[in-house]
Image 1: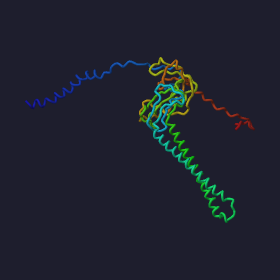
Image 2: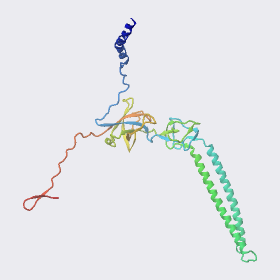
Image 3: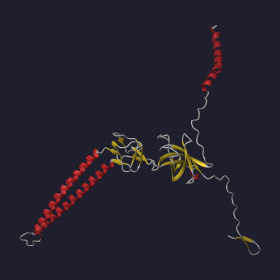
Image 4: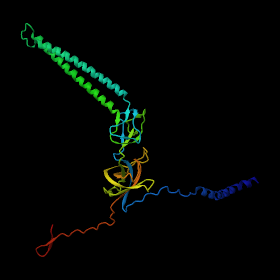
Length: 344
């Protein structure tokens, strides 16, 4: 009896293997069935021209966004501005801790005082030596002053004069060192190079402002009285762009916000395409032509850094190839005997 059950077991397993998927398949299909697609948040903008090229535009200040860096790495002792603040040219933006530089300046100024004292002492010594020489210079009687004594006093006067010149040179060097250090101290106060608006402040008082590459700059500044759009056109279609062409920009995410763009300039050197992901390992091989446009801010309220979908009008492309003109036949002249020959 046990043997019969043993031999029937494979048949039972085969039957379960066949019937199992039949019952489980509908459940799996219901679970894997895709739901309705999500609704479209915003429809893409449509090109307003019959023939056009498209590119991504980034809003920026008319002076470009200026990255104001610290002249040297150091602790920010004072941050004078905030994001959104208007500044005038020459107005202080931030100050780097200058205590160490000030101490060096005091040391060099003390060296200047020492140099001035050395010059005064050398002047007195030179005057005394010259006086001693002048007393015997015009005496020719060897019984009063020997020739050797006169020559000795002359050499002493010349040596004293050379020491005076050396002291004066050392004083000038000390003054230049102090002046250079004063310039270094003044550079720790970073002023605004233009009239503009503070777009971003990345460092606060007490934080380190570094001059290393790939480190966020302390202040980003720009003139926002006039905003520009930097349009990047792929190199594969850049040849279709005609300087001065009409363009229209649509604010990304809302095609109802749009404005006509006026041509400003083109930067003819193609550069690598800007990575919008911010990944440090992304490799971008595409090069782009950058074209600068301006727009009326009363018609389109935009901020630096916003993206626009830009369409630029281009001349209609020729679809028919120009017919190939047959080569003109070479002129001929009659040769003697009635034969014709080609004129070379």
